[in-house]
Image (cartoon, rainbow over all chains, first blue to last red; front, top):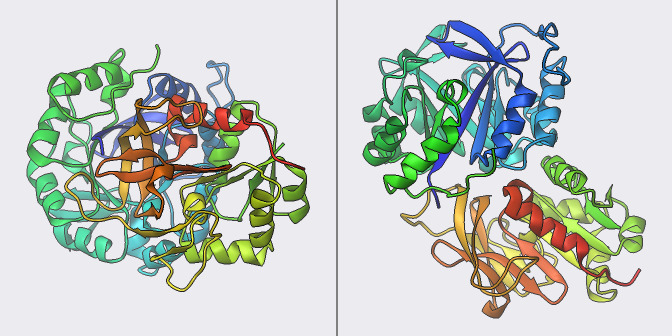
Length: 262
Length: 204
């Protein structure tokens, strides 16, 4: 099994945003255009996280000459028509019906977060119906504690305990997100990632902290997650996904060597 | 015309998107008559083996699929759980009989340093013989997401292997099965679906 390099896309009210500190969100583009680009680049996988706090979708920008969707599920349908690589979708998932709706529109996996905390039957029920492989938990943490509701509510759980609980309840994959590194480009939280990777038998995806391509390599070499994910770096640098992959290949990380066209 | 068998479970949309993208003629169906009128079938599937089989029985498709494949020689492509259901049984759901079109059973993935379980991601996959457009001895990266895998009794039907010689694809007469997801395996995967669509169909 190859190591994966995942493009993470934060959506807010229908548009792609750059995220920093879980608070600052700068609009940087249209998700339908972006998905075509990622498909051309043959990305390993994409994770969409809808971080909208309201249900209002931004319909103002029509300068991209493509349809802008008026709600989350329509957007998801448009995305899935344009990519033939795996992608996950999450944000605001609270019920089994929410999961069903997302999978029905072509997502391979659903990312859960606060929903698991607010309703402790959600994960076991979802595992029963959809299977572990369809479920990813995003774990937002700060100074070892897990936070929910967009990083606003501090829980009593420390990261290791919460991850163990998720694994016992059948989660298929864990997406680790260090709140303090969001948008900082200061490198991954290697200690926590390594600790969780060693502790769990399910795959772990590392998120937040990538500032340059070397950060991916360092994370694989020192913490050994199944995948690394990043958002901002793929939006602001030309052909960044290609160069990131090439640098991992040169460093000897076992990745998929498919580079697509661009 | 391909009958895309709809078990009412969730991931059929990505197969539909792939077929649409390739302009392949298909009908999404859970009706016996459509299986009789088609010349080929695709059986996708997620969830547990037991659920999948009971869904096939609920829809009265279980015997029809067998008949169309065996008597009328229609090619069938099973994807992921769809492939597993072509076999006789699964340790995921003891006591449940599969379609039994291929001899062998489905077992949990063994622990290995090569992957975590669920085994998710792209794996270098080796062709033992030509398979739906892919050539013998070729290596290609395909996308997997599973916790169980098939063990055919007759290893000569194993078309593709990955990691620790896990069976990744089988071909037995007019029966094709992929553990990986061709509809999610980018260009390599779309080529496989296209090659299946171009096969000569069975008797209608």
